[in-house]
Image (cartoon, rainbow, N blue to C red; front, side, top):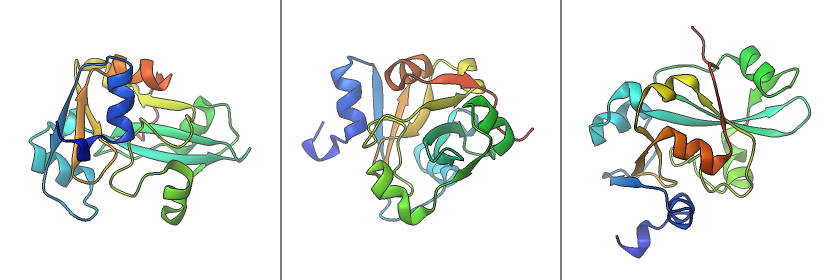
Length: 159
């Protein structure tokens, strides 16, 4: 693997001896998760997006949910013990996480924030998440992702 592909997400997986597959695709600007899955051939139901939210307490939280679904704000807040949560502004994403829109991975943010992975991930032996750069996807076991991010599993999307 070329040195230029070593994102923080990849370094963390390597350091923790986690098995993963790095998938790259041609893309130089933000595309949504559905288009990313189409470009990489990843099954939509196994492809997850990373959302960063802020609670009423001003703490940040990471939610890893299926790309075709929307987060349920009340359920998400309850899951992390907050009165409410809201999406952070896109303009603040890089300052908070170190990542850009479309390249935000649940791995390797500037700080490790409490992380919740949608419970549907537990149905699969592998899921797909951002590799920490536009044009990069990581395929890995959701249990490994949970272990390395200290995440919990919960159903946090709109039914």
